[in-house]
Length: 359
Image (cartoon, rainbow, N blue to C red):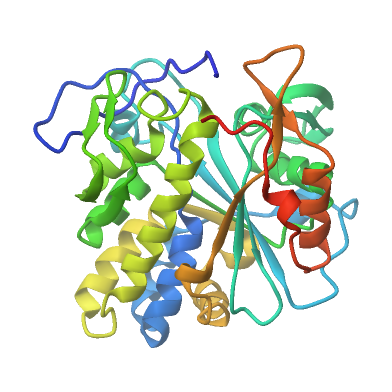
């Protein structure tokens, strides 16, 4: 659907490595994985104290000020989890395909809602091609960027930065974002490799000539590079749009979280340290979570969340009437979805259905 997929990316194959072609966009967001990872590690967080300096922090509260939605009246929490295709660093440039592309984009965004009680969670994926109204925002250098209507959601990060992405999500949903987590190309790949790969049940044969991804249907154990290609593929499944691959992203996230939860991290401090190191080196959070101690404390509060019970939903969208290569939030479904999250309530079945499916 989107016609700006020009950034390079890695090839992946179960049979043999192929030369990389240009691809763009990290298609899964795994900051929430580190939270559950540290919860699994529990009492081992003290081993990670020396890794504090790896985590980059963004002061969201200072950047956004007081003009924000109210906090949940319960103890529920909302996390905005982003996947960044930053080219910073040699490994990120290689995974992104190198070339002259600069900057970074947030090609994946999930609002993860953890209701009161911390026994379940729901992840709402916002398609990158969604047209939104970007509010007036302040950049890191103090300059003001005027608001603008009908901008593509994933352009907000590149143009203004992460705080503006948070503000855009809050304005479009009315949902208060309590925490922010972001992971980049290299972090995704290294994290999967550090846990020894992830097994997914590939829903259909995939032969994506644009990325080189070639997989047969059925259970497949993927390494980091293969996993990155799997969650980024768009030409190998569905109608070739961003919507078609969101299902793969959500499926992979659940498989990855389940893999982490199943590993005996308490029995392997060395492996725990390796996983934590690979995650923290590529992680950016809000300033409230920008230390191993804070992250571990938050993680332990989520220890009861079972990946098997996490519900995944795509924001209900419809094809834009002016530009069919873009989508807009569909009403009344999206309004019902956000209202349920704002109130820490049950999401209506109607609010889980999207007129545009990418199938």
